[in-house]
Length: 311
Ligand SMILES: [Zn+2]
Image (tube, rainbow, N blue to C red):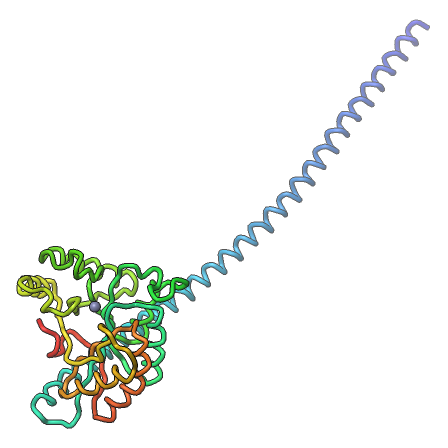
């Protein structure tokens, strides 16, 4: 009996141990399986996330390629335009010679606008576009972030508009401070020119090489020779004007502006001074373009090589 009892106990212990073992094994198996399942779904998540990133990357690469293509195209256009301009200026230089030698009936008018940009420059640009005429803008830099003639607008972008629409952008010094230090010394003048040069380059990407003295070159007085020497060393030409409508001074109405202008147009190559802030000038500008073209003037933007640009 005792032996049987002992046998039974052993069997119970064995069975209990086996059951326990099975329970433990099952526990581990279930746990492992669920962990495996978890890992599998996480893996799927990661794989799909990787796919999304791959797609995004492919899109970015495609966009980058398109952007590079577009940039190359625009650069080639810029180059083409700049080459065409060079050709036009070469022909214009030849035309100047023919005019001076009386070998042609054509004449040239260089229309120039000083002291801008202003808010009203947009109107000037529109009129020039309408008449397919290119002009020259002698720009300054001080106080142009807010347009002087309309404080609700910024004139900062106007430099680029002028350049992009095919006009010559030129230097009229940064401050235009005729009575506040500009003409104190050659250095003060040249510093101001360089400051405007940097601003124009920053806003348009163009390095200008024509300057107009605020008030005209005679305003420099005794400094004129020293300043023009320095400008020459810097690769600049400088220019005054031969005609205008008086809009830099007091012009009471458009009739006076018109009479001023037409009484001064008499040379075969004219450099016409306007200011793009002048409402009188903007009013007579369409008529002035028609008047000049009727008188056989070809209206051109200024260029460094022109005989009118002093070097
Ligand atoms: Zn001026």
